[in-house]
Image (cartoon, rainbow, N blue to C red; front, top):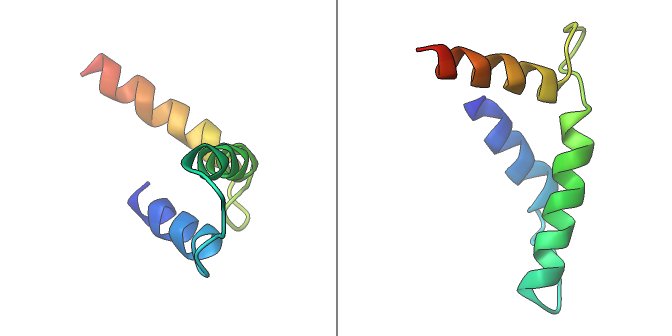
Length: 62
C-alpha cells in the first residue's frame, strides 16, 4: 500500500499541477484516485481497489 502513495505522488504531482483553487485540485485528486483504483500492478490478478478492500476487511477482523 505504502508504495502506491509514492506512485500517486510521482505520477500526479510531478510536475506540480496548476489549479486555480483547492476545490479544483481536490476534484483532480478524486479523478486520479478513481482511475488508479482500477489499475493493476503488473500481472497481478486484482486491481488496486480490490487489494485495498481485502486489506480493509482484514483490519476490521483484527
